Image (cartoon, rainbow, N blue to C red; front, side, top):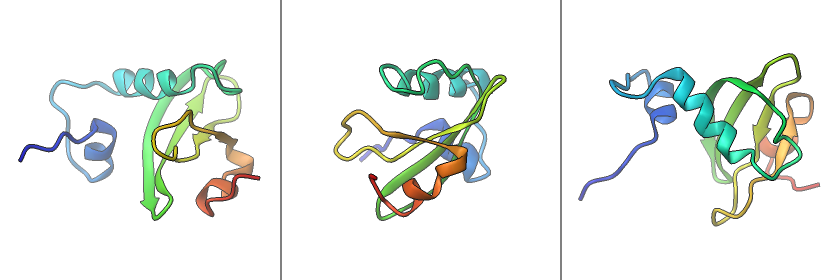
Length: 96
């Protein structure tokens, strides 16, 4: 069966996306920030950092501000966010 792979993952695995630009990847990650404390982040770059048993880990570079990293959502509920300073809480799966 056919499986759709997000372009952020394709690029992270050293692939290329013929029809998705880096700006569109940033816009996608920006859309995930809507309604969160990180919603004012003007995402200029986005990347998939990796994954573990807790989920996929993404990084967003914010224009003129600290970057943010969405903590992996559980069952696609609204993601929580960590600044790049406290990213370790996401990596470890902590919600505190």
